[in-house]
Length: 109
Length: 113
Image (cartoon, rainbow over all chains, first blue to last red; front, side, top):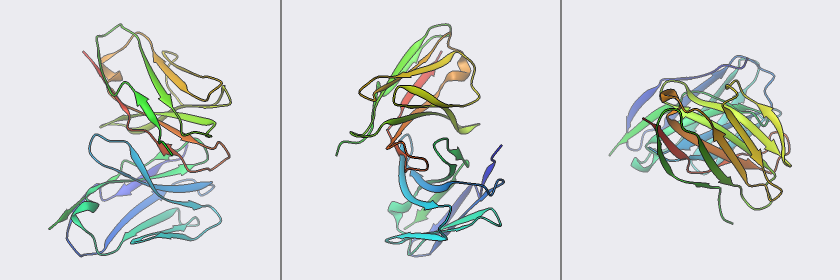
């Protein structure tokens, strides 16, 4: 059974600092890895999808890397802004996603 | 393009009742998946439907069931509600090919009293 872990569970950073969020998974035979953002009481917004054959994906200030051999992915958010405050979730799988419990981020103005 | 829509957005039920939740996927998407989100367990996969057939199923009791219609809209039903069923129920749609990006709706908040 795939287990996905996200550490730390919560973190606060001052505005302008770079954010580094970690995700680890137990079964390296993943298909895809997807990063989502969730605002309180809302649904999930897809940020980046990395296919298992890829090493990283970039979108604007966001960059996600994937290392299947070590079972890890890292999401980098450059020059954080207060609007980046949210919970970030990592998920792996094909059509049946296994989620971590998220990194709750607060960016302090 | 309209996103994934879920109705109703909020529901309050009492123990023993049943409930039906609805999900309309993005136009052209043939796969609909359902997830339960609770503070303790996080997001857990319930089931996935593709072309009106259940393609994947999570580890939930038989009280949880679903179906998909020919227009790809999906419904999820929970019978004999328990207090522990209180959760945010999220539906996601995708094109259906393996590993396709999943797009989530805003969720239905179910409270069981």
